[in-house]
Length: 250
Length: 285
Image (cartoon, rainbow over all chains, first blue to last red; front, side):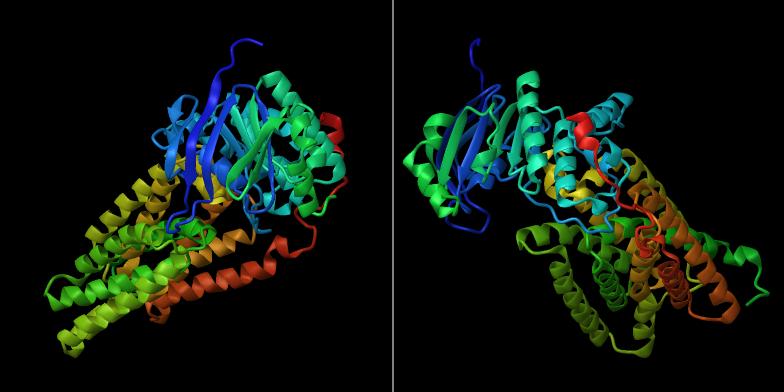
């Protein structure tokens, strides 16, 4: 491997929701190099989602300093986000939602295409390719309200892939999937990481489905990163065993 | 009424077509973003504006449009600042505007003043001038250009605001633009449809379109067409049966919605998208 380039640099980051006093995450120091695959684990309320949304700037940090792709997250938020794919944990979809899956996937490219520009044939080719990658090409013309939770999750994943991101932030992307789909997504994540060298940060609850490509795990508790080490060390540690016990897995 | 010369009716007919277009086009956004109270809020802002105009002896339409415009500008920042749903802030503004309207009317007693202010709420068939048509035409053209140029941003916002923001869309700007255009659409349709009923012209055509289409693009085309049709049919009904114009338009659009509920293919189980055995994952992955 050549010289590692940091893609994310967070220094003493603290994030407080507007109108509140207590920080949701605090003292976060994190450096992520290009091409890394990191899993973030921790119990509910540990600050995992807040960490992801602080990285992509949707939640502006309130203390410390943070850079993604070498740019300040707050100053260059919308610019940075064009290169960050984000898969959200849960979205409520009304069964009558009038959005076709293919259009939802294309909407992931909105920032990338840019203002005052229309989607080109190349953009649509990327949409079809992303839908094929997650196995949803046959669902292109189906309204999202007619999809199951797992199918919707895959469409949202395709939406993030269509962005052709340098960095993928995944908030429990496997949560709505059945066992088969989980394995397929795991394979897909490994492939994307290996072939496209995309940097991936994945929040996960299910320690059984941490993709094999993931070599680094962050453990979060009460808004802090309490452990940051390689997969083997973290999974064998006391702290994770305690977490698993807390979650009822052990 | 039937013997009226056509040229006398032309501004009203054009006004009906354009008001039907702008209101029901904005309806596609309002319905999706669950901002249905915006109709009440804007119309009562306009009512308060009209009352204020009468109080200070200025054309009530000018002040009505001004109040609706300011309310549209305030809505977005206010709901963000208060960290409340748009509908809650609209509820607050709605009651405040009603209170202001009563204060202005109370300060300028007299049936004539009250009648004039109330006409903003009921609408009137022959009150539309060529100037009003011109303003509606400018709004219609601007709205079409805005939607065509920023369709992909608007689509992303309507699908999911947080995800749109995560893809690099300035959602705040487009959210405020939608409120702003809705405020204008309501304000300029007041003379014809009336403030109390303009709400129905925003919601009914889109709700009708939702019964037939699952593709947002098709809803965006069908909704204004239904809106225009409702306005023209309502106009004809008002002219022939001597009904108030606003009420006629709303009755027609409500009837169309009721019929669409009966005919909607979405009501038929499994009609549009019968589930099939999904094997595609195996093929691709």
